[in-house]
Length: 444
Ligand code: PMP
Image 1 (cartoon, rainbow, N blue to C red):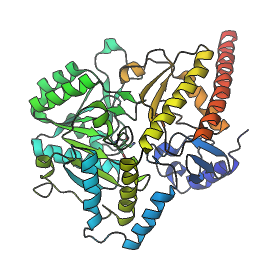
Image 2: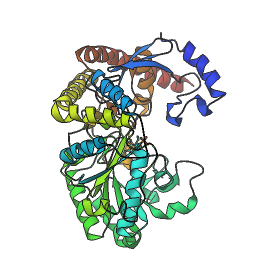
Image 3: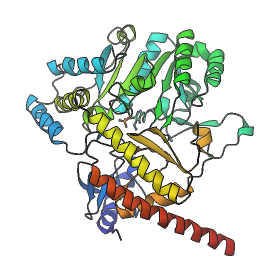
Image 4: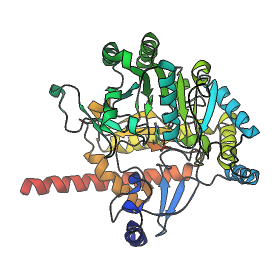
């Protein structure tokens, strides 16, 4: 049985100094469940109790090649020799920007940021400046970072279709309520709903933010038709279409979700996979829109294009563009799905996979939900019960069923065999646990 004795002890110490004992709310898994990492290598991480895990979270996606990848780290060390940041540019910015433009045709002009949040913030500001309109639309279930304009969500968990549209609520205390009037939501894959909102409010809406594969909502995926309709509606109503590729970029295809699903954004944002974990992000897009930067729009920051992160991105993108790394990752994801599917089928457990094999959502229903509203009606008790069992067995998946499973190039055949063995045990333990719970409620 896994012991978290040292992590628990460290939690008690850390919680006295850091709120929730961590540096991001999402890393707190409960007073006795919060894990502290000693190190990661390839597809595996070790916690401070020396428990070993095969990791399918990968830091929410960045470690596309695996942790501590020697090729990227060597480049990053060379980046250290450059000296950090100078409040001046370096030549490598042009080199990396050119590679990004080559890989993602819509990325005609590129600016670097430090995090996904910063890149999406910049994209929204640029979109507002270009369109002259302050509001924006987000797809229900979408997540775009920790800043006020996007920290809102459609409350679907206690929602019934007869109630009309779900209520829109702030994700966080401290988000100014006045911003709510800028924020609109529509369900994924519902072009009629999108058109209705635009017909009513287009004079106030400057941007549509789309996660084409919802990396924060079980990889629910936009249909090609929806994306085409959304594209046309944005053109018709003078709305800047922002495809947020913070999770999908340089992962689901060399040209991201735009290449995979055949859509061309006006603006797009990247982070995570582009630096294999080093903090770097990008806002990019159509030349005429991006030219507002420097012509009225402010964009910058002390740490943008830091020499270490930039060198890491240069190497990571070189590997993604010039090798078959993404094909390897996709194949691993497909093999994993086949293996997991077989185990579930043998036990008669209904399930489905969505998204892309490199970032897949696993549902315990025969048909996957089409949008976030439908997700609220799927049975996630099985997933919620199984996730901690997998953790105990050394397979790290997100406890929240909304987070997809991420694959990296370092997931190899040993990882696959071990994952399938442990998944099989976890499923059987979960079946027993749920049936014991049912019996308990029946006899109570
Ligand atoms: N957009 C999307 C689609 C994301 O998944 C995330 C992070 N999970 C962000 C933006 C914010 O990125 P960061 O955490 O780097 O600020």
